[in-house]
Length: 276
Image (cartoon, rainbow, N blue to C red; front, side, top):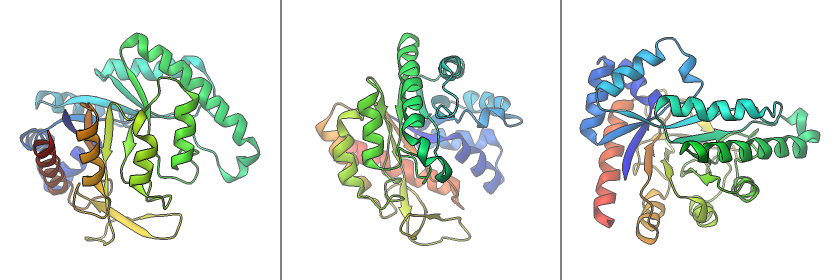
């Protein structure tokens, strides 16, 4: 079992706190956070590889690579395999595939685009198995994602043998779905990673909210400090299954990243130790 955090949060925390990136990473390690979730798009940013070297020196490693792809429009098998190769080059054994989006203007092509995504995910999963890499998907919180809901994500799980669910506890709220019910429906596919995202209902100081499909404003919150039934979900997972994967801290747009990481890590480790 390990606790990880998004690369974005470490970089943001350093900027917010005035600490160096190395000092911030060392604090993360002291909190019990040793893994990083690094997006493929972030690797294109100036200084990204240098930053990763600093984080590795401080004791953090790349745990998973969320990968934005466009397989709905561009079902290129070589690009699907290249995503896996990129993850391997980072030392990651997990890829969170975000296979594409469908705009309102493309609704007539939805079935074809979803089938393109499925074909490329099958290629990716098969190739990743050869490389010792696990491919997963999450409930992405966006109206253009055909996997934003329980039914949508489960459909992809059923279409792609070997695809794992990297369950995001906080994203079903975007679709105005109950997270516990979603967890129960997708539990058989959850093997390797959980995104422990909580959500708040109050702005803590100029934070950008996510607006749900029902028009509600929801804000970032540390794990265990918001309105998501995180304890119920994780307690069930850790007591009724042999899950031994990654618990990823996620709170994009937080105005206090370092504090949220510390509070999230403490809450998660306390929960782990109380049930295991």
